Length: 285
Image (tube, rainbow, N blue to C red; front, side, top):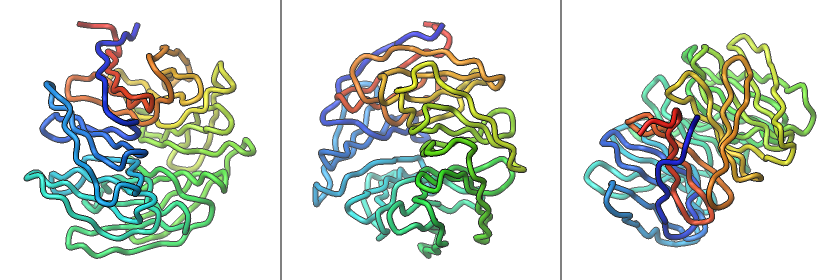
């Protein structure tokens, strides 16, 4: 059974979390306008200017850098391996991921665009209806994303060809999405309290959660062949096997948002109540 390894108090309200190539843990503090870093010994913070940009999703991206979206600040930030901080303009960016083409892909939640930031700094945008939210690289060489208000899952190729797949459940409001170990994409429906699975040819399954008020938010593939997801409404960490079996772990604190896989196979969760929680998937020491 999974168990909590440690809980680290963090300043502010951690929202997104990622692990860089060196194994350091990075997180955003949306309400405080800052980026945090846990090295294993202490928490360091980088204050952003201005402080009202609302940094949300953060990923280890191209160029050995850490990238984050400032939703209200209308920019994407980059922290290089040397610690240098730089920005590019974007319109209410939210989801981020590295594409199979080596570019940084992102969503513009309010204006309805998918963006591609190439290694030379060129930005290309593709319009899409329905509030694109999270985005991830798929097993088929394309990018897959959630359409929160269109109640659909989308797919975009490297040259911008877009396909959308409506969800069976109305007002499901999908948010998080990730590539699964089974060659499919897995996503969470914050509005319907369900986990979904879509194959690369568009076949969809949905798995209701035990707590219908769970409000699942983010999802990742774990080290154990299962999918792990945060439940913002119930303060739990969820686990679902590729066969659809669901189990849950109560988390200390409240409002878990982002989660990331550490280099040792542990799962880190950003708790907006002011902590980073580390969970051992199989309970090993």
